Structures are given as structure tokens and as C-alpha cells.
Amino acid sequence: MQTNQIVLKRTSNTEPDFKKLISKLDKYLSIVNGDDDAFYAPNNILDPLHTAVIAYYNDKPVGCGCFKKFDEQSVEIKRMYVEPELRGLGIASTVLNELEKWAKESRFEYTVLETGLKLDDANALYRKQGYEIIENYGQYAGIKSSVCMKKAL
Picture 1: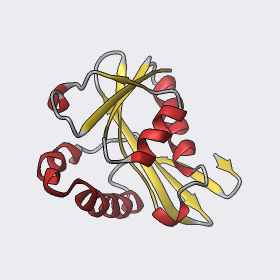
Picture 2 (picture 1 turned 90 degrees about the horizontal axis):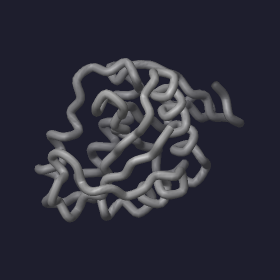
Picture 3 (picture 1 turned 180 degrees about the vertical axis):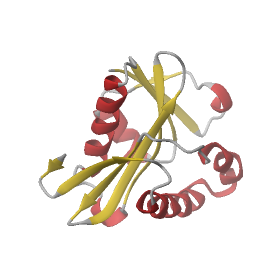
């Protein structure tokens, strides 16, 4: 799929371009999360998934995201990232829309996600895309630095 100069690729989270972007995401999150990074880091390790999307801009991998099954009706959006210098161009929205489309094609009815309270851009993106804040779930229950959200597909 192509949107302007953004080309999307459905792939797995073992794809080398995905891994490179995730390495940058992990470095970014370790700075943003500071002392809380030790709590979040284990939650970001994923088994191999075949539900990853990479965004290419001018043939360069610049953004990504993936999802995994959360329950019988829902998937969890994970590992969303866009290169900082290209934020604001709609790349994250394009990746997220593709993940939601793919989840719907796979017969899921909802998406859920967790993001950090300090990640203003991410929170704004998800709210703009129709996500609503829900009670923190699973390992994020009671964690004040986490924000959990849900959206019907």
C-alpha cells in the first residue's frame, strides 16, 4: 500500500528493518522512561509475530508497529515507532490504520494498547485515532505512568 511517499509492508517482527527500528525505539523509551524503564522493558519483548508493519519513506524504513492477540475479540497494538525527524507527516497514523485493518481482516473486534503517560505525541495520536482510555489492564494495573486505551474496529 502506498500513501504519498509512504509505502507499507506487512511482515514479521523478525524482519531486519523492523528490528533496527525497534532498537531505536528501545533507546528512546529508556530515556523517556528513566528509572521506570526496568519495569517496561520486559513487557516489550515479543515472541515472533507475523503481524508487523513497516513504513518506508523514500525507500528508507522510518516507522513500524505490530499487534498480538490479546483475547478472543482483541489484539494489542505494540512497538509503534516513527523516526523523530519524520514525526508529524502522518506515518504513525498510516501504520496504525494498517494494523487496525489487518486486525479486522483477521476477525478481531477491538484493539487495546498501553502507552506511557509521558509520551504526549503517542497519547495525542491514539486519541485522534478514536482510542478511549480504559482501566489499566494486566501488568499495567495500578501503574500510574501507564495509560491503557481501547478502540472498536
